[in-house]
Amino acid sequence: MNKKFTALVLAGDRGPEDPLLQAAGVPGKALVEINGQIMLARVIEALLEAAEVDRVMVSGPPGDIVEGSQTLKKLLARPRVGWRENAASPSRSAEQALCEIAPEKPVLLTTADHALLQPEMVDFFCRQAGESRADLAVGMEDYRLLEKAYPESRRTVTRFRDGPYCSCNLFAFLTPQSRGAAHFWRQVEQERKKPLRLISLCGWPTVLSFMLGRLTLDDALQRLARRMGLSAKAIRMPFAEAAIDVDKPEDLELVRKIVSARAPAPEKDPD
Image (cartoon, rainbow, N blue to C red; front, side, top):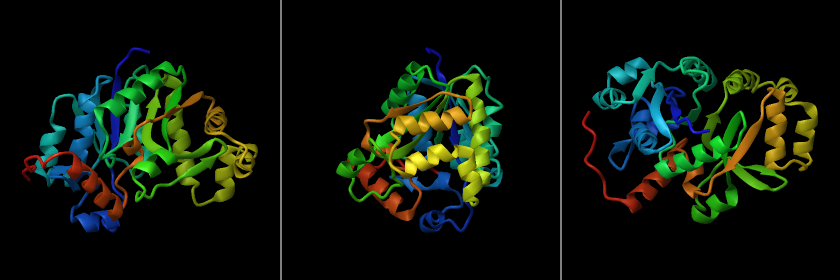
């Protein structure tokens, strides 16, 4: 595959009670500042600088938050950047936004809290995904790589037969058929509080094999993809920071520490 990607950034919020928003003192996650720059700007810049991306679509934050921030309005008015109102959940936002992108166009999906995203991460993932010949690709990282570099980081870890892995919030929709995965995601999201129904979506044999420690990462992903009538590939990311997002106040503290150690603070965004 030699087509460039449209990047879709999910930038919705969990609501004003989110501890991260309260700690940062902002109305939306996209406005959380890191080294003088809002988090969404860091993500968009990394995507625009990547060789494999030609356009960025942002889903969220809500219109009232955008209208109340000159920084956001300026950022979302940049060339090659588009914005749409987010839906009620991440899966619905993804599903609706994907409907607005040509089916033959490969799409890279990521999130506004991926504050350490770098152009080289984006290009590595997109190139590996494009060469996979799969319908879907998912960025994953060996937890041991992250633990060695940042032992203080606390991430959700899934343990497979071939090791512990973390998600990198990088997903590639590579074929027209792959768009159906967003609908499956919405089903999973709707059933997340009903374990038996959730297991039925994934399939009992897959769940039991996972619980018994029999599945590798690739086995698990392929079995799940087959439930959707698709093929999928795990892209193992060699960047420790690729699995770090800003979901909690302690994540924000860590990311600010990492960014501050790398470079002097830029000129602060006006607002």
